[in-house]
Amino acid sequence: MPSTSVDHSTLPASGKAAAAAGRRANPWLTLCAVAFGLFMVQLDGSVVAIANPAIGEAFGADTAQLQWVTNAYLLALAATLILGGKLGDRFGRRTYYLVGVAGFTVASVAIGLSGSITGVIAFRALQGVFGGLLMPNTLGLLRAVFPPRKFGMAVGIWAMVSAVSTALGPIVGGLLVEHVTWEFVFYINAPIGVAALLFSMFVLPESKNSTGHHRFDIPGVLLLAAGLLCVVFGVVKGESWGWTSAGTWAAVGAGVLLLVLFGWYETRVEHPLLPMRLFRNRSLTVGAIITALNFFVLLGVIFFVMLYLQNVRGFSPVEAGVRTLPLSLASLVASPLGAVLTQRLGARFTMPLGMVLQAAACFGMLSWQTDSSYATMWPPFVALGLGVGMVLSASSDAIVGNAPVQDGGVAGGLQATTLQIGGALGTSVLVSLISAKVGATLTGELTGAGVPSALAVRLQEAEDAVAMGISPVSADMPAGVRAAVIEGSGQAFLNGVHAAVVLTGALCLVGAAVAAAGLRRPAK
Image (cartoon, rainbow, N blue to C red; front, side, top):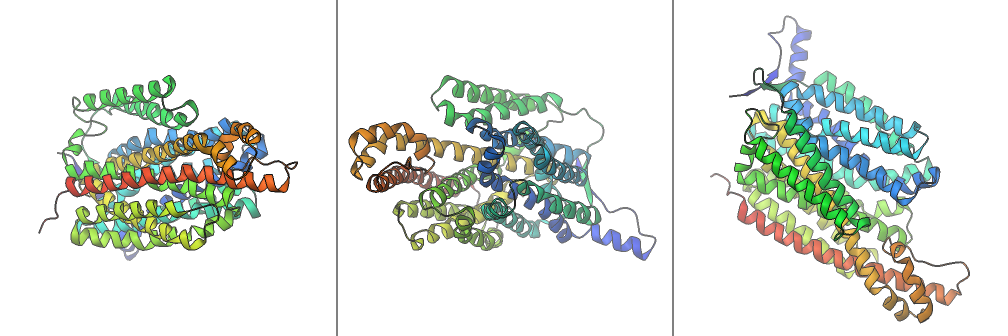
């Protein structure tokens, strides 16, 4: 049987050596160290959306090229997360975490210096590769150094860092784009990365599995990477190709077939990349499903909320980010609270509670209109932050906490992979749903707001812009017509938002039921 070893070295020969050994044996210092890298990756994932318009303007990039600024990162990350966890488990979690931090930092600086949209896309893909080495080993390191009774609280703090950095992205990105330049959205990773490297080299212990000599699962790596690439590519292109198009179905279908083949193959090798035995644990399997749903809701909702605040309500990026602060603050509270509740009452209580809170947040957004006061906005933000933080703590404990210690990195990679796939699905599916609803209601909303019928029909061609919350007005429009176009197109966008929140709210209730039925009761 493989075992996990944490390298504390031999008995110290001096006071200095004893202090060094103590540092590397301290789990809370390990938690602080991995929080640096986690914060950098999660912050970067959400600040880029704010920077995309400025990047497009700087390089004259079209919409398709801007999509690849996000998609190149997403594809590379999804394809390497489980591999990164496996490499850490076998060859050293500290080593691959440090490689990931260093590479992510260098790639971030290279993006700002690239000088072309092609360079930005290429280095974003490289960022994704190093992020895939970094993220799963954060949880693997925690799993190796924390005793079971304290692991839940460590995961809660990990989840808090993850949720808060994601939610802070729009504020940080808005400040940098407005007051500095878009390049600093990436340059900001340099000081964070250097601090992470120095601190981590000082305090992180090395941990890996003692498995003896065996061949690395290269076929498994290739099958998993190809399958995830196809699925995520189909998902992110579904919006532009259409969800019923042959290209979308072919990409997703090919990915699913490759993943099925991967699962079959992994049951027939002695040392698999992803041990299928992990899925015999029902709590781990349910945790993976709910993790995907959690980020489907979080990233999908944040995407259209930022469009609503900036394009419909007219707030600047910084003003929009400040208005989402209740979400960040609620996440800050909910993640450690969720860890405590999970330790005392079990994930079977915390996970459904978090999903119900997210459902309440989504249904609360049905009250939003084009002129809604902030009093109608902050309660859903609070409920969403509370729900996401609780679910992230509980699902992390369900996945990584239920995996054997020797598979901690792989389990962390599994969680991070489901998280990324869920987020990609959330953004793509909800944008497509909003676009479809806008297309179906735009002409009617424009005429209802007072736009002449002939003009309303012509403006139907601008449904793609309206689906992003942008009103198709021009300088030569009379003031009355201009106001009517703004009102009608804003209402059409909100029709799409309302359809999206009904879907996400219903999915959250289904997720709550799945978690309540599928998770085991905590041991007495």
